[in-house]
Image (cartoon, rainbow, N blue to C red):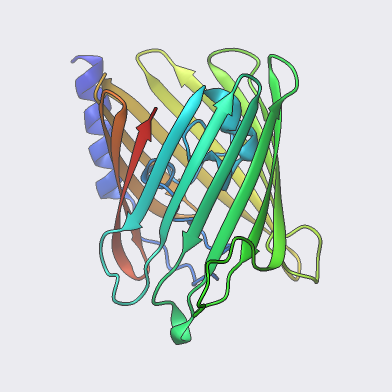
Length: 275
């Protein structure tokens, strides 16, 4: 049996076998899964050591230096939007050893009529051929508002490091503050990724959440580049099963993700354009 057939069967079994988790709901900003980008979500939200797409500013800003040029990105929840919806958009630009990022996460129709809305501004710098650092400042925005809010209130931060000793291995760390005055650090994420032969990628994250103690979340993701134009994905995000599909045509990529959780199934779509 060929490697492609074996990989395809393992992908299908991973999606069908895993049982849904009964985990509780989380606030939007520190929600797990993060719901930002169908590729990371399809890989179980294990993206800290990868962060090689435009949405890197949401995950690990240090990853913004991994390409050259401009990338536009948009993502949306494609099902069950009557209860809540998680949408995101961003623009990322990298030139030589410096990367810039603007992004916005919004959850329209949230609980109690709220509209959780966060704006990100990120900067990344390559320190050595193998190590990069990045930082994001993020603000909450008030709604309704009669004017566009470039910033907002309750600023928080993300600090990220990415190291890539060779083409097959990478690691990352992300330190986050959610704009909470009670503590300087809300979460710390450690990630690692390894690329195997035959275009197979494995990524692992462990998140430590600091809220009346320390709780740990495991995240694991798998991606197989089945063809030059198609990738298959599966993962576990804190016991939530996820799966995904990516299609690429020239400079445009469309990604789909599915997550099965205590509330049922949710579908997400995202698109990215490279210039």
